[in-house]
Image (tube, rainbow, N blue to C red; front, side, top):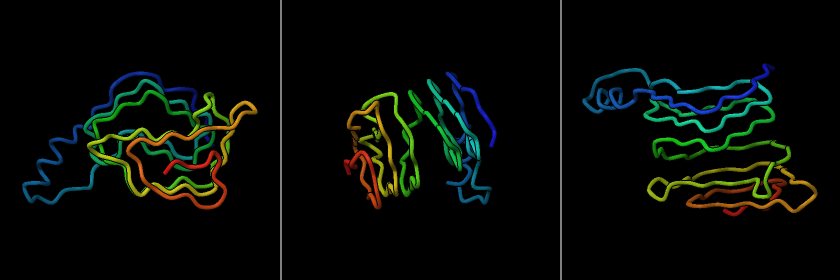
Length: 145
């Protein structure tokens, strides 16, 4: 595991608009690149970041532990078919499971499997806005889908 201190602020422009235009014209080209990827890292903090025009995915977090993402903005992508599995931890706020998705591009196909989050000996809360999905196994706080 790699230890990452913190990424705070800034703008990542993945230059995806030109790739999408090229693909739309019928030309064959690679799928594209992720704007920011974390694999097998721990203690990751991403805050105040703007990711726009990503060619493929804005932020990919794979096999990481103790991850905090807050205040991240993206260019209105649709998030779908994402699975959160075997996640345990504590939250800095009482709403520790929050899906705040775009009304224009709502989140769908979100799957929570065995997710257990706590908040300072209080009942944690979940908040879902324009999000749809399923929960299986133990999911705490109770999901709002």
